[in-house]
Length: 354
Ligand SMILES: [Zn+2]
Image 1 (cartoon, rainbow, N blue to C red):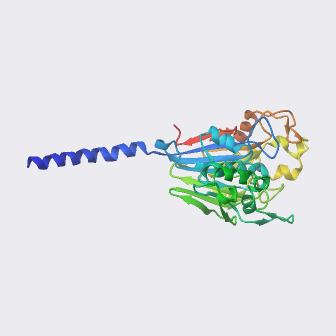
Image 2: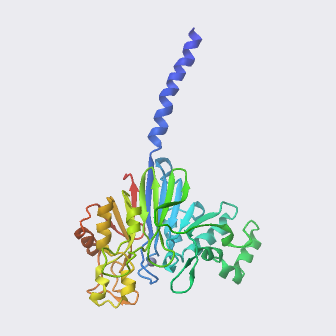
Image 3: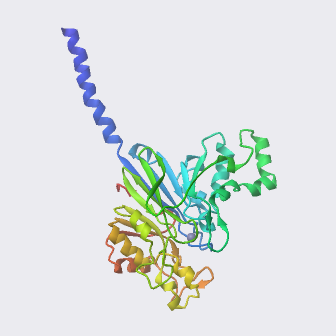
């Protein structure tokens, strides 16, 4: 009888210990980081090109179980390194569209993965299927991925590095890309998932093949609009924002979206061609959309013009450089009362907040 009591006591102890320790430690979390906030192909003050890193995990691994990169403009790899993320750690990279300010950092990322992690898993590259532009050519994410290493194949770099380490794949970095394409739908559609993390996409208007994404995790959700604008490409129209993105963003926690400040408008003398101005979502309209969908956070990125810039590419900023307050004022006037982040490189939001 005495011997029987000892194991029972041990059992009671373990029942106490097992549920308490992991439950307290494994609280899910998500971090959204702007890896670049430059708008368009121009360079300004060291800003990286457009991109957003979404991390999901729990307190034990610094929200780092899943790491997803959305767009990869110039310098994305540098910003990832400042966030402690290596190319090998990315589970997938998503592209909203094929403009170079969203894609030119891709080669850097996948080349480095090829250098050091050729034996590791391929990188999922998730983007639109080939899209015919009404202007008479094809926009092809698949070709971007297939030919991403061509310059280095031609220069002999791939052969040289492979001679140094035969584990590197013969075809260069393209051999490490697992391209997953979808035809951008008018209703949200799942395009990628892993465990509790689900990524949906929707068609949106900017250039042919543009798509916007939403990530849902147990810790929260984020919409990455990219450069989406209204299907009605110029006024008169209800809003410069995309109706599809608004559907995608219903009830979302965070919206990350490119924006165009009203100061660049055709009525203000910046010299920016009206179609370039109108194909982006205006700052006031984004604030109004964020309010309508009930978002808690609006992260403005891909700011046109950049904070502190005299010019936006070739175009003058009428009235002189803008501050974060100039963007914030426009959002506040729209009636959005949530948290507005006027994007700077590496600005982050963690859910839940620490
Ligand atoms: Zn862009």
